[in-house]
Image (cartoon, rainbow over the protein chains, first blue to last red):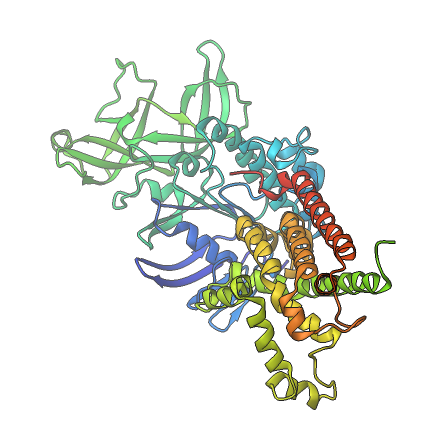
Length: 360
Length: 231
């Protein structure tokens, strides 16, 4: 498909009493884009507008160069090549799980198949669920069937509206791995609405940050999360998300070696195979700075880094410092007094002492 | 033989009338119920009230105005005459038209309620699964709202069978044309022929009871799938 890699373009201006949404977006045609923001920020509305489930006059949507909505054209939802996963599973209650999937398969969009029946069933672990009715499935199972159903309609783009929001924490943990597998297996762009920092850290390649109906930031997740000037806090603290790969293990000390671009570190070995791609999360509060490499420290990962910039944090006693680590950026939070004592300058060589690294 | 030939004719006529009216009401009432359930128009409440009007109007009021409207000097009567169809009062077609209006709320309300209970989500989900409006109606809405449609059909049918006031106003009492069961019973009572009145009346009671019993049994077995399966 020659136009398969054209970006997704969205222009939307919505106004209703007490709510205003203004969005001008150009999104990458592959990978997972997460619309992230507090509730009421307009992220679900934006997704529904893209799908055509809400119709507003001042909206333009173009998917892979195909106009879905212009000021004088509106393509009905059922003629858009999309898959949609709703917040609460919207399975048809009169059909079994299998019949729900067949419903989508019979109406699948033409074009190269995204995946076949067996792949979908395996990917989402549905083998034992197929002959049950929706009311015989748990919330998490229903949502897995709903995701499978959206895949089987062979859409060019997959839209997911907080698919985990109506589930309890245990069910969320049950589904997240499926979503990560889905992301690897599916070669179509996914637009994913969420207000959960965990989901962003684990799934997002690209992040759109919405607040109060406005786009505050949009870009690849890595630079966005380590940007000093953005107010994005995933959860309790600022921190970087870095892609890496397991490249070795130390059996004696139960450690896994993880290579980043131009840097590497050791983490607790959790049994993943060598060669596995992983995502690391390094929180600003877990990193400290030193001018010399300490050889008398208990800290495992002490890496050479370069100061890229800094900014006094919300509380003036603290300063957020951006460090370059190989080809990556990470953040560290130090006391403003320490920052002054160390006499930081841009380009200065320092040692980042990383106390804790989370594998997502 | 408890039924005279006229009685049998009245029964047959009543069933024919009720079946015709029910079929037509399902065809016309469904889009009205759909529009009432999903439209955001300000006219929704007005239309809802108009549809519900026959519920509370005395049938004679409805019959009276229909008689005028359909009659030779009424607007609809002028139209039907212009089309070469003659006038509708005191014909079977006239009875059908009158019954359509009279039984309309009994068909629209259950469908409307069933659609409201379903909410917009099943239709939305179907649209995102590449299903067009007709496809969605036949394969998603109709099966999910089946008890509502069943209730609508049964109530529409039973209510048409039981009407009296409107029939008398618009149809009169012409054997084989407009003489339905309720009018026939009235006639027997007037003639003090209580045996025949009993026969027809008891038949009506048994019929109504069986119909309602069947409806409730059917709706019970199809109850579970009407819910969306989740809260």
